[in-house]
Amino acid sequence: MSDKIGVEVEGMKELEIKLQDPELVGRPMQEVLEEAAEIGQNSAVEGISGGTGIAERSIESRVTSTTAKVFSMIADDRVQSIEEGRPPGADPGAILPQIIRWKEAVGHPDSGREISLEIQRRGTKGKRFLTRAREVVEGEIPRLLSNMVQRVREAFHR
Image (cartoon, rainbow, N blue to C red):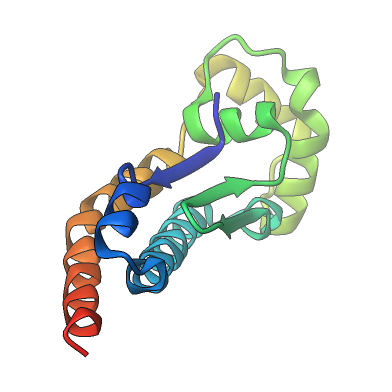
């Protein structure tokens, strides 16, 4: 499972050549990517909140001149279990240390073993924090690009 959300705009080089001024489009595009990354990161953090806070603090974003990425710095298998949940029948011993940290952080009254056995019996529901972040960013792209076009128009007429 990929723990990254990427946004790339195709045709940027061609547009820059047409306009004969890479900075005319470059700065507004950078602003779009930075805002998209911030929106994605905030959405992912909101979707994963709770527990010990480790997963929330692991969400980061990186922006280059042509990409914006939002990702988690925790292990892929842990990201997947948070994103998708755990099916019934999962080995309770494998997740016991995580459960103990979580139960102590939130003050859950049951023992870690009891919680892990319940997870083995029922499974857990996924938080879909990366899926939601991707959907939120995708929904914002038209607005972000419209704002970019307006900034390019204004700069072009100066």
